[in-house]
Length: 262
Image 1 (tube, rainbow, N blue to C red):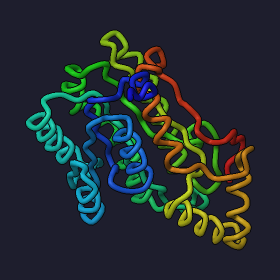
Image 2 (spheres, helix red, strand yellow):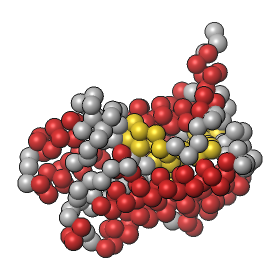
Image 3 (cartoon, rainbow, N blue to C red):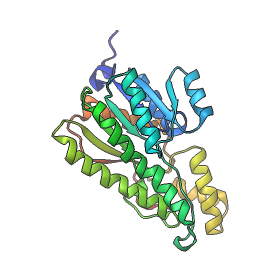
Image 4 (cartoon, rainbow, N blue to C red):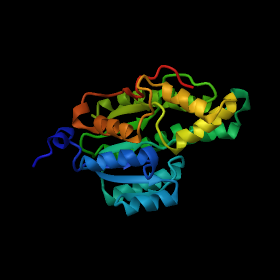
């Protein structure tokens, strides 16, 4: 029986690379692309996560997306193995430090930029030759609701996620003539270990209990719940699909209608 929804997406057989794709949101994205019939290659800085991804049948490579040298080496590896690339998902990101601006360690600030925005530059720069040979190629960058809203105590993270949106819109302009689309996803708070750690840090900063701050984060959304990693995966697949063939330069919210961040 024909899976008509998969046919409409046009993802089947596409070759997809996902940075930080061996766990968390990245793995959810990888699984959604696999479900749609794509061939997926994930990278991650954590060796144990890469091994776990391999055990699930994914091509997986230990690589630090914040290192241009390692990204260039990875591009060479993908070129030798696949010879082309249809979808690049720039998912690598860290929460960065939490605190008032005057308390932020300068090295922690720089590290947040290295992972959250410089990695996207490196990946686009080095994978663009492969994308140019791809089928209906596209780039999906992970931003955040913090990429359109301010968030007290999270200045490094917010600044990087605004930068992702700026990069995305510029790439859409630069690459549109080559029919390479570029869009960003702006998730709200997504359930998982990372948001739990953020909530703990924010609770300490505010002098509130973890339970109180968890309630604030849940209540940010009009749906009164955290997003699931699979919600982000669904949007990534849509943006790379034929159904989004005229969607370019957009920052797509997956936040349940969030108007204020805590």
